[in-house]
Image 1: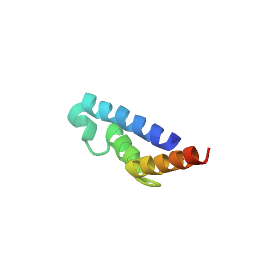
Image 2: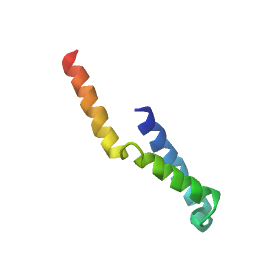
Image 3: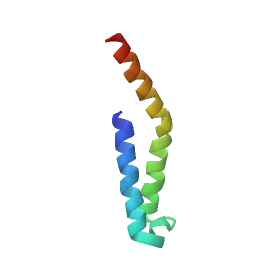
Amino acid sequence: MAKLFATDRAQEVIDTAVQLHGGDGVRSGSAVETLYREIRALRIYEGASDVQRVVIARQTLAQHHRG
């Protein structure tokens, strides 16, 4: 859950940075563009965010049914 939360928030922040920097934000080699690529990779690593949400939901439901 922490990974999902952190990567979702990081994506929101970098999306805002790209908007603020305009064309410079997507220029190859710029700091914003580099961060955008890195954060995108984090969202895919160990499963896409949507898959993580499904896994969390299943675990939460399983715990609820046991308890």
